[in-house]
Length: 419
Image (cartoon, rainbow, N blue to C red; front, side, top):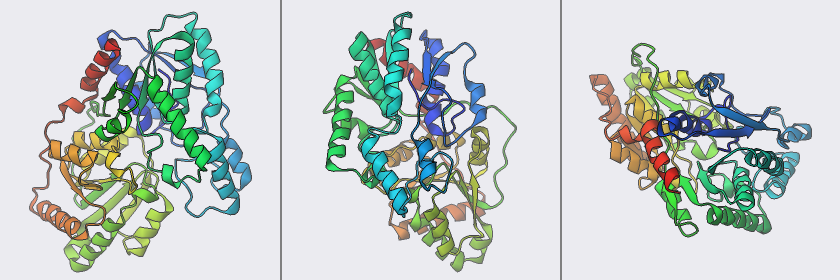
């Protein structure tokens, strides 16, 4: 199992395979993990270290990350990026973005490919491995899998937690035509070379099936929560968004609607409490300020996974915001599955005919409102608020058991044995 993100990395990207690896031994599948030594993770969550199985063999390979050079060329943020592009870069930052987009293809971890192939070749020649799994992004890891398959003829599964050329921020990169072609060519080589491809949603499957007939949807999911006492619901009409929020995900329509409702109803203004848990782009802060909602919106920053679960259980309403990008219909954020576990109502803002809307409809866990449908959003929030005042605000969540990580691992184990 080849992954860049591994504890102490935080965020949803690390949890997918951390959880699968937890359950695979129950299906007589032993995993060896290969990951990076001394990485520069944008988000760190040390609590996830406790979830690594004691008996798991973890190999680590050194990496040179060019991001470390960017701080020498005018970046005000000296830490690693959390995936946000500066919409108003300086001249120097624009140059750095251009270099990264066009010379670090498919991504800045390309320099890990050759040393990883060398290290893993030595390991494979001395140990019996039946199958290789690579997970991206970063999609450089799929190129490691491709090279190892060519060299040893091993079965190889490419897991796409997010799209490659259709990922939400791809259209914002300053790519030349030559670089675009290189991305598409690499993506096609990976898809055609893999024995099977795993994706997190139906739309991504539809995108890939022209290049591989063995594309399987294996969604993210939720795991058991360690009991820490019953969590009381917030006394306020609380809305919580958990996770990163970049400029494309900024729900401008929500801030406008909340401003109108606050101005129209003193009771609503008194009860409203919005919590943004996770890193937010400057555009989000600006939108909140322009709407005059500073006193109603709190920015909590990144918190550990266990604390996140507590916020979810205590919130009256959970916000699910989809990136307003060309690929919006295919966006399936990992947080939706833990939202389902909390059994609190989910208010989504995004395509009403997208993959996330289908999940909300299937599970009866909430509603999806289109990006710019202010009247519909206002009516939905009014109804949720009326239920809150009546003490009846709850979700009628159903059909979620198949999203449990253990049940998903049943499907994964079956797929691995069939390859």
